[in-house]
Length: 433
Image (cartoon, rainbow, N blue to C red; front, side, top):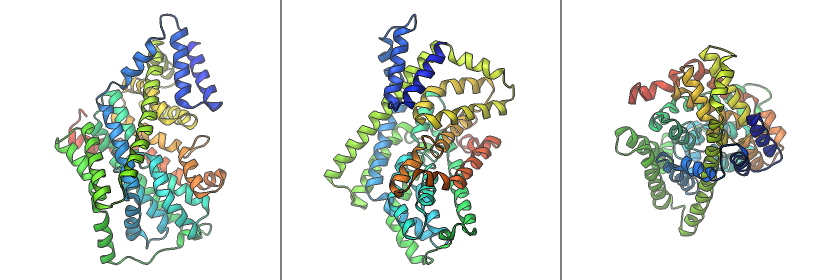
């Protein structure tokens, strides 16, 4: 009964429009105050204990690195480069959006940041080329889901710090699924271009000459080099995944100031403030959700959930589908980050009982949170791109069907073929990671 009251109160507050951070904090404080054997002093203790992690130190640096690169000229350069590469293919601007988001994912690690940065440039260009606003918004929103899947990823850092799974291994595990999403989205866009209902996708740009491609490459090579600097340092052992955040921050600052010359002192101050606000928001959600997660553990929620799910099935595959379905349902209604922090201990606990690979499980959970970014009622990515396109939300939702299908197709592939997520980290780090 206590658990039902906790989840019922949390859901009610969210439905009433209470910010997720305040909702989690209120429910947690009420719980530790009213449950026998607990005292309010436990609330700050468990909150700070959740944040007391060396791995989480990487979060503010990757957030800052993404903010610097996004506002320092990176997004414009990558979009121009992508257009030179795929502009002559049917659905050129759609492919440009996907390729740009894939390239930016190597730095930003945030789907919302990619949706805003790429969408602000590509969506107006799409509208000028005849794309219906809802369709332009849905393409960019779907492409932005690649951000947290291709490393680096804030969600991977949080998952790894909570479960003990190698963050470097998680970074590698996201490479193949992320690239598969990009290729599948581009295939869908190309296929739709042959349907009568999608005439705008048949428009193409003149094929870029080799010299134009080389010039575009020269302009963006520091940005294209970023993933090799970050991942190369981790894989070679020069620095850890946490230290990679500092390297990414310094590298993005150097590139933005000295190469793109897009950031001055005033802009840097604004970027630092924005990154600090984002970091405080993320850290607040992590800390409060950690306190709520501890309280659920105190109430034996993990064991109760395991026993309930064991009564449904004994198949590991069926259990994996149930866990992902539960995750999708909750992230459709609640903030994805909060759901991850609260449910990761329970889902991993159940997964271990059913011998599910924690590496595959982590990547699938991250992919599910991104699918939820395209599924109402929350659908944060659709809301961002809809506001940029200045259209109705219902138009964007209707247009997102084929692209949501592409994401679900890749999700199904990673479920049925675990090696898509586990082969690369196993190859590099060995089976233990």
